[in-house]
Length: 76
Image (cartoon, rainbow, N blue to C red):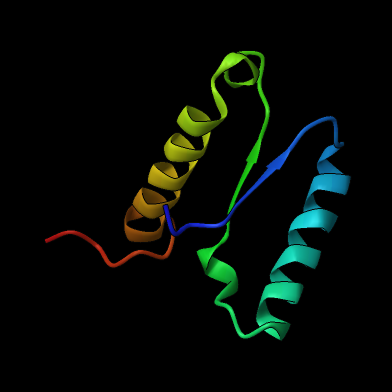
């Protein structure tokens, strides 16, 4: 898996946004594309998953959203 994943647990929404902004800024300063980072918050469901399964799911969702999320080119 090549997608860097930041998994957040126990943060408020405001704290999570601050962590995401800081990670993107650090990535940019290190010459990495900030949009390449996948972020996820733990949920009651995913906190029970094996780490490998969780990271794979987050990376797959991230790739899907990069191609199909807001701002993506419309499908013709």
